[in-house]
Image (tube, rainbow over all chains, first blue to last red; front, side, top):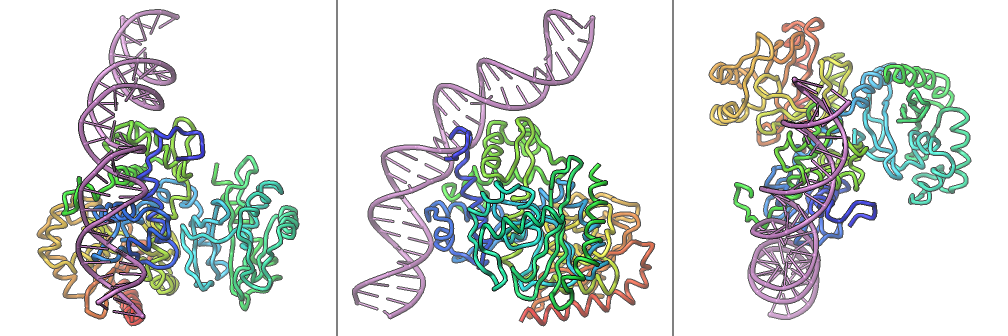
Length: 256
Length: 256
DNA sequence: TGACATTTGTTTGTATATCGCACAAAATGA
DNA sequence: TCATTTTGTGCGATATACAAACAAATGTCA
């Protein structure tokens, strides 16, 4: 099944398919029928049905005879990561402080495929039209943290990711040309920070810096996002950037 | 396999076992060997091995040849719930506001078995020795939101849950006698709020109120937690309780 | 150190469970 | 009503679980 090096007998198909079924609830509707999930996942309806009934039996999902919905219990799975991994817990108080000092929202993320994956967040106020929390994903190519994480991959690595990305213009400011983005990543590397000015969503600006371990490797990105009406680009660089860098520095030190 | 009404053929064992494997990472160490997980879950080593290799193949886990660790990608699963369910997103700005007004942490939770399960949280400062986030769980019998949610079950329902709970004294103030807790739940019902004064952890107080839908059913609990040194019981009731009630009222209205 | 016991990871054989297909039944809509 | 979509169900082919055996690593003690 896998294209990797593992033997077929070392792979549990039923488990892998079940995980795809859970993820089918990620985008859009929370109430899905068996046929809905089958369409979204491309799995056989009979297989989807068994997976969903398994989730319902374990109370990870509710079933009203027609539609399935995930229950909060499914949060246990992500929590297994959040509680066991030191990084998110370590970041949280620093993000809280950043949010407090700037009066805006502050987040941390890592790269997951072509997307930025939020691992921690402190929100002072809701800044975007969508709700962000640990587990949320945004496209890397047009988010400030994504630019930081792509820049850390080097030109070749970044180009690989971008080649796999669906580059579309969320606003009329969005960079969608690979070479233009690669050039921007060079500036990001040189300056040590990335700024996104309404490329993801009109009215939203954000600035991000890398979080590095002792070996100088970028292990995550930190950002502060603000409504364009609240923060000019100049303010972001002059007022927020020093705070971000300070936070990154403090966190790096406590990484030990 | 299940003890419910589903037929055996409608249950995917491999999936159910894989989920148990993921949850094995929830408590304690983030680096687990095959044997570690087998011990924690009670599953056969060979079965655990294939589940873990499946997770690694799908990049939900890393494997260094000896230990497995979950990757942030596992957050996608919990996010499937958070992004698809309106309640957590609806709650977040209200919790943010509560945290800002009180200068403390504010959370929302639902009951999951004998435990309180956090579905949203706004932290001004870290108040507890442990890190809480969506997916975190605390025992219901000795937490303020737990008392609210147990009270909503009625005496019989609450007694059922408590009978299944491992009641132990976290501090010398913890109520561990079922009848004493049931009596307290009566007061909670009457007053419309629950207060925990260092029953869960020394130095921590918290106050919670129910969040009700239009039919008057309790669908979640909201709380504010504070270090005992920052908030007296009187302050909680006189200053925080009105804010909590106001928030619950506002949220109820926006439930439509 | 070296022999022995324990633990761990991996493989194998076999009974059993699961998959995906094809079809039946039920629901939905024109 | 009929057409369409969705759900439920036997069935043969295949995949998986379990137990047991094995190999490798690790720990223990004289």
